[in-house]
Amino acid sequence: MNNNTIVLTGGGTAGHVSLNEAIIPELIKKKYNIHYIGSYNGIEKTIIGERFPEIPYHPISNGKLRRYFSLKNLSDPFKVLYGTLQALSVLKKVKPSIVFSKGGFVSVPVVLAAKLANIPVVIHESDLTPGLANKIASSFAEHIFTVFEETIRHLPENKASSIGAILRPDLFQGNDKIAEQLTGFDATKETIIIMGGSQGSAKINDVIKQNIDQLTRRFQLIHLCGKGNKDEFLVGKPNYIAFEYVTTELPHLMKLSDYVISRAGSNSIFEFLELKKPMVLIPLSIQASRGDQVLNARYFEKKGFANVLEEENLTPNTFMDSINQMVNNKEDMIDRMFETNASKTPEQFVELLLTYKK
Image (tube, rainbow, N blue to C red; front, side):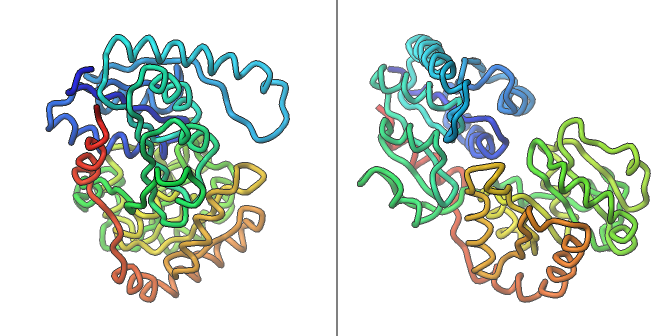
């Protein structure tokens, strides 16, 4: 084992990569040799490649783990098996002292390979209930860190602990002037940032298009629309700008924004909470997901931090009603946000993580 080598894994969505993004600089400071195992074409490859080109990236095969019947369920176990053998080859070559997994389908073969190689695995679960990948992988993990106390009851006994959210320090280093340069907007005007997730949301994009004139009469709109989703009809509209995807620009865009409209991944919600941004959450529906975003959204709505608009109820009218309700409740939301502080820095998390290495 190499005590100064760590393998990170996680992917499929930006939420399964963001924590790894946050802790990599801390691991570099501690002079760790970092390797990343991800899928061949997942968003993790793009994010890690763009932000940390010096980190070796090892692509492996992975199958999707489904809770429903599909003919692909017959072939995907073989993909997972092949990915496990590929991951095992990487682990034997780099000899890490620990593997850290943020979840997603690609993490399962990596965790299985680490178990076969007798390398300790630590997992992080950020949703109220664990995803299927983390649920499977948790049986082979040394420890599972969770954001919510409630999540622990869904995991193996005596192997999980709740530590709150882990927030990136750079998120709080946004600059209005840089944001104005990026957008052409005026920092003194009310601005909404709209985030449909790393892949975008056709339904959210559509209601923005239908309400664009009404919205831009009152607000400046920063629209993170997803790869390949820029709408030519909206390009050049006053008080509107679209980005397919952002990385280092996000802190500046968040600094400029007064309100957030977003999907309901818990990492993102905690960031909005810490930045004191009133929010409308539009969770992925149960039909399109396992329902984790619906649970997240309801949890934060109950605490008074957000308004929730179910995707099934999303229309041009309900969209505008939710925005108006958020604006009217702005002060109350922000007051409640100042009463909570349940987060850790990446530096604190890395210290906890490394206690489990060999």
